[in-house]
Length: 271
Image 1 (cartoon, rainbow, N blue to C red):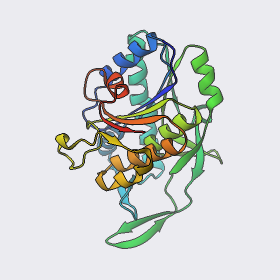
Image 2: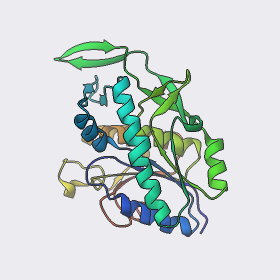
Image 3: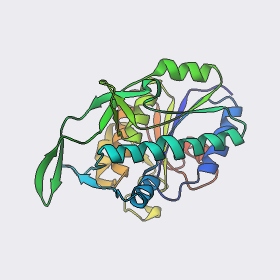
């Protein structure tokens, strides 16, 4: 079964069943599906940062988005968890299922490349402030040549932040918007954003309030329903749809066969 490329972003929140994701990815891969996995690691990064005595700090930005304050020490912890522990866990699970996965951070081969934010505006006690020491940025370029080389040679790429700036600095970047760029620039058939909820909920956290479908031209309108990290997922979906990706699905990564279910439209479908 040879179909278009599927980009799967697996979140890093509590409750994700990574073994189920790996089993499902392996089954699809063996049927001839081409896949790229992108993953996060936020919950584990928070836990390890606390244990190392450098607890996470989150900035609230105008418009309601939040981001991790990323100084150099935080970046090192972020790299250790995302590119080390979480990436190798997923690669090991795939290898166990008989899939020859290759794990890369966005630094490797400049897989994720973009512009570092020179200044970040945030709110503190209702006042607008600016920080210039925040090592964050957004992905603008994806090394599609390297990814196509791996896929063509029979390897399943497993990708994770951080990204690299044009000046060669490591920088924290959002995994959902990075996955959207992978989907757009690799001309993927679908982008699946799997997390610890069944999809976009009209009345979070009531899982019975699932929104089954969002028209592609109304994605940004659904920001009103997005809580917490779901805001970045909605922005990623909007980027992917604008960039020509056929469909985006918000799916549940706590269940068996999460990729297959999302491909079948279980969750919130954007098209």
